Image (cartoon, rainbow, N blue to C red; front, side, top):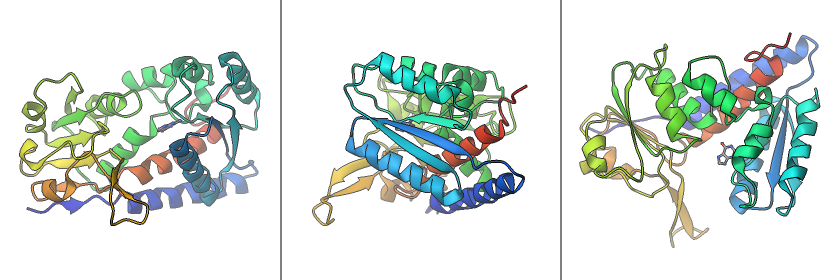
Length: 297
Ligand code: GUN
């Protein structure tokens, strides 16, 4: 068997086309364009690249955006004051504070200071809690993007055994919730593995759907999966590569070339899950502008 490739780049482009035309209609009806406020604390090179990708994607679909760059010495109080200002500003629809934050700032406090109705990342406890009881909410973009891939390719989830490797707040945990809830896109039997899991293969070998978000290059080898598995690789790792001009290449958490021979479907890295995360952020920002999830009264 050689797996079919799940083309996240293509599906994300379709989603962005959809958002672009929805934004156009929204503006034609006399509304202002959706606006996303990005906050970047410090100059972590990866965060600079990620926020650049997000703001470029916004402009591409007609969402207006601004990135406020703050010094990494900013105090928690000062940062919260900045966020409160955006919470109270009716011309701001979505607020995104790029993670990670400098170590003197608590990400929990910062996330909770964002108005949950503007939390387009879906990180606020109100959104996380509503996700877990299956109520309308902003959903974390990466796992929501993975669910879109299943939908696009008509990959069944109901009653399958989904194994999620990695239990982060951003990906693994919400991913497991989305897969296991009793709703139209969920109903999978779901196992979460993490760094304390004793025998990872004992779980991954039973997966019909394997989602890997562990941040470890080539963690998943072919002997760890069963024939016909659907593999979603969320990892993006830089590994040294003399052949590349940059001196490195991007690889996922899955040994793609070897595992694809056993899988039925697989996402590549890059071009799999990554573009879907950005597309979901666009969709969430449009939903925030339209007040679709939290209608105002
Ligand atoms: N850092 C890594 N991924 C993300 C994300 O999806 N949102 C934010 N705000 N920061 C991140």
